[in-house]
Amino acid sequence: MMKFKLIIPLIIFNVLFCSCGKETADKTVHSANKMHLEYAEQFSVYALDDGSYEINIADGQKFLLVPEGVTEPQTDSNITVISQPLENLYVSASSSMDLFDGIGVLDEVKMTSTKLNDWSLPSVRNALESGKMTYIGKYSTPDYETLISENCGFALESTMIYHSPETKEQIESLGIPVMVERSSYESHPLGRLEWIKLYGLIMGREKEAEDFFNEKMKIFGEVSEDTDIPENERRTVAFFYITANGYANVRKPDDYISKMIELAGGRYIFTADDLNTEENALSTMNMDMESFYRKARDADFIIYNSTIDGELENISQLIEKNELLSDFKAIKNNNVWCTEKNTFQQTTGVSEMIHDIHLIVTEQTDGAEQLEFLHRLD
Figure 1 (cartoon, rainbow, N blue to C red):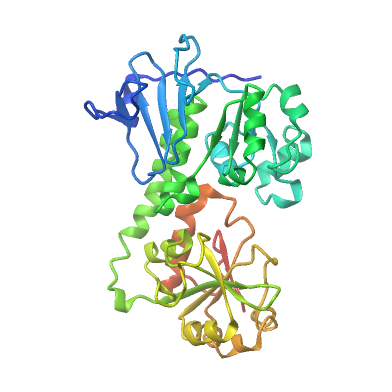
Figure 2 (figure 1 turned 90 degrees about the vertical axis):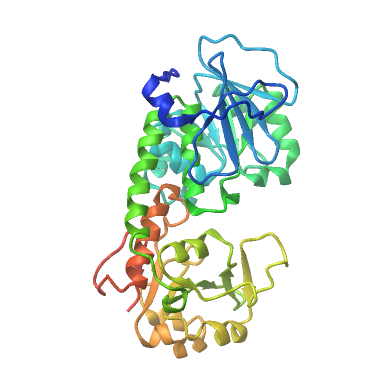
């Protein structure tokens, strides 16, 4: 099995890390150079003098990444040691899987808690179908025997694991370091993508991660250069889906989808004044159709989220969900779009998604053009 050694030439070191003086990240581990991050705020990394790395996650998780050949130092009990090289990973956080694929280490991910039919990413589906990756049960009830027999070297969980803390404790009791990723808490959509730098460091693929992120930044840069549009001149967008109970499920204004619409040069149709954003910590909420109609009927564009009930092929299928939609401005003007099935699992596609929305709201796409994450409903 391929192993990845931590090799940091001076040129890569200079790209990834900037001097941060005597800033102290943790009293138990001495401070050093901090990884340069453009958008991510939910993790930080410090390169230490002995060649190891201190990793801090915003919710208080602390890790010490020890390269192969470096003697593991004594640490406090609240610091989890991750020893390289890492093999036989268990990735329960489905949104992170695409990032491992992006740096070319998907072969090291041997286990997942998401079933084959729930994956839209071709590379992950192929891995599961070929047996290179195994579904080992729901995140809260993984097959511990498989974790042991596969000699799992690292487990990556989503914050859902906090609903089942005993599961995390059980995995850790097997001697497997567990990290809970928090990319969904990033305030900027590109902050989610920037977690690829952390995984690149952990897997010994720093340069690949940096190059990948920079390529995506170029795509985003092309959009941002063309979005100097006054707020009152921006075209409005409604992003939603109709639930089985007949409600309109919409994104809250501070959600990353809403922010992508803004970054693309559009204006999300709902504001904090329109929604009870204090109701819960979820990024979405349900509205009764009458309330949704009053606010969203004049939106210039509709983007229908097909993730829950499947992709739509035409406007008639959308109107069948609720007749009120037939009176919407976007439907009358044939400005209705639908997400593709890979929209949410393909974390590496955030720049492309912003680019797609930008082409839509600036009307730089014709009705026949197929974008990467969206297609027009006729």
